[in-house]
Image (cartoon, rainbow, N blue to C red; front, side, top):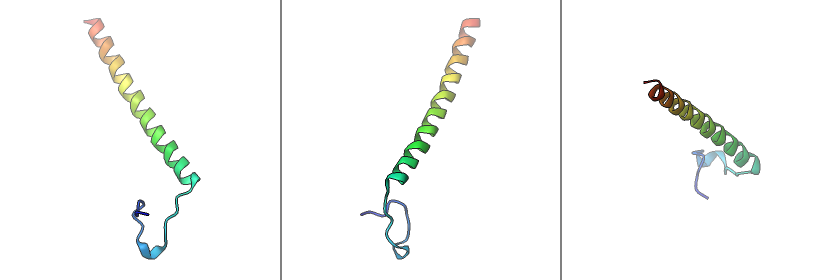
Length: 53
């Protein structure tokens, strides 16, 4: 298995577990949603500025 975590081989093998996969999924989902909301706010503000002109 490739060394996905960047852990040196002398520290032993890194074994992926369901917990690690779930934790990574939650973190990535949170970051994606926060980015989407930030971009959505910018789009709404831009639309309101065009509407007021």
